[in-house]
Picture 1: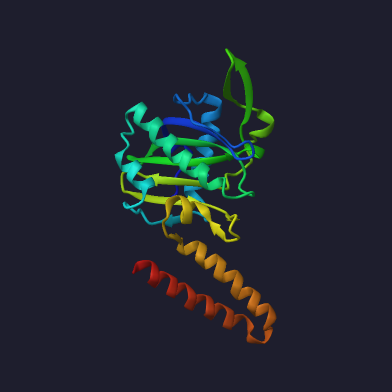
Picture 2 (picture 1 turned 90 degrees about the vertical axis):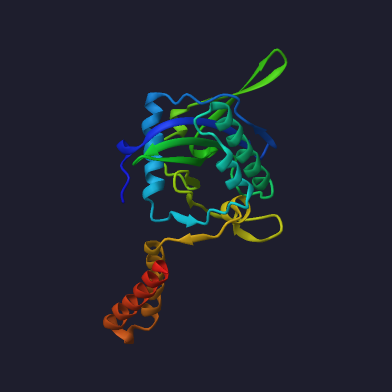
Length: 246
């Protein structure tokens, strides 16, 4: 089912600073008051994630800390929401520090409602396309404040990494990228290290990937013809549908 931006109702949000280059993790102390002109931008990004062909489903593993924290969180309580978000941000930051390629980011943690179901999302706003930070000195304390910068928060940019948890149905979906960790392993760190879950590519996405593979093979072996290509696609799609149903 396609989710429209008008169907999304925001509830709460916080933003945590995850600056790997400076080794700086700055958890938010208060809720982030999203301004009206930013709400539409965020709504479009959430809508894009929910409807993306690259969105993958992952197992909700109640034995893992991330899911345990979410189950314990009282989303209606501001303090519980902020503390849970800070815990998840800290956990993610530790993993990011194990890699020199994962970009620093502001982690937008928000809850929203659509179709009478409550969702919780972690959206990475990488520095090159999201927020900038202003360091200020006040009474010898370093205060970090998030400020919007129109030049680096363009409407056309798409979020490349994000996780959406359906709190009502205990389901999780995400869009992620592979990065090489310090031990040399190139992994999907969001599922393999952060969630410690198994991600399942959606059937539509699987078909797109396999379709491109089949097309590549047929270019190498044109003598098999278009009919053979279509027959192969049909067989592959039936197998995918069977696996999905099971």
